[in-house]
Length: 218
Image (cartoon, rainbow, N blue to C red; front, side):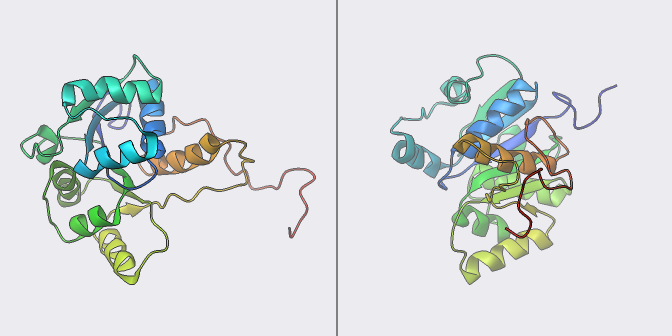
């Protein structure tokens, strides 16, 4: 019998907001689908504008076309299960606590979305789905992409942490000797998925020892 967090046993919700850094979501989709996970995806309204600004590509509004869009961006034509929801469909399955999931990741997460989730404002499907995870005691992982944080940002993030959410800022490490932008992105994605006990990103993990030839104290 498969465990509750094995591929396709229960879906994982991925929320994508209008914060900069959509590459984090793309790489997460890639690794989850390649590992045969089921993903329920919802992108906020502002995601469409940020995607256009960062990638100069128009993101389709129709949910039926979004699956193909995200698969193309992630480079995964087949594998796993991807279901995309319109941001305004507050009657979708992920808006109900009776729809069982492994949890939810919001990546990248804008400070506007952080504020709305922290204050319980479910103005769209993404925010409602996040609220559901908290009320049901399920994992909610927030990946804020902002710098510097204002006191308001920090207080909202603290509120979410106190409510049970995991806060995983998009801050990569360097001990794995990254050579590309994807190496840096993948480290963050791996640490995010670790919060849900999902290990499907091939990264070098810290083994407790410095590499041979590394200068101590550097």
